Amino acid sequence: MIGEALPEGPATIPGDIRFGEALALLRYAAGLSLDAGDLPSASAWIETHDRWLAWSGGLRWRAEGQLLWARVHRAAGDPELAVRHAIAALERAT
Image (cartoon, rainbow, N blue to C red; front, side, top):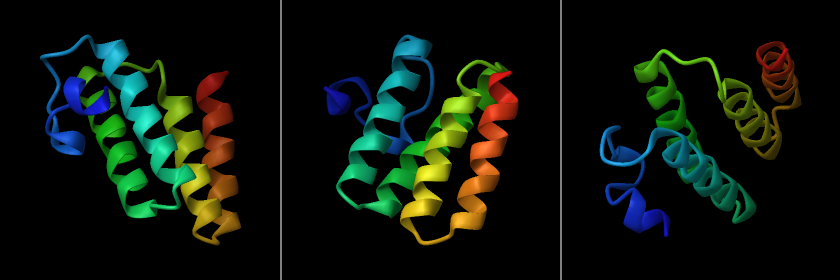
């Protein structure tokens, strides 16, 4: 499913898929990578999510991206940075 919608993986550029659906798939791919303990892949998916949001200029879904970064940093053993991203997520959600 992810490979069909985002054939270039994290290198996929915006434009050929509905934006909201693509962002959901990017977050899903990041979550799967995190669950598998693959932090480099998770980071690549989240970076793509961030890049697409920056490209769009939109504010929606930025909190979700920050929460994913918090998970990456917690898994990497950096609780301080994880908390900073969690706080950033809260700020973007309100």
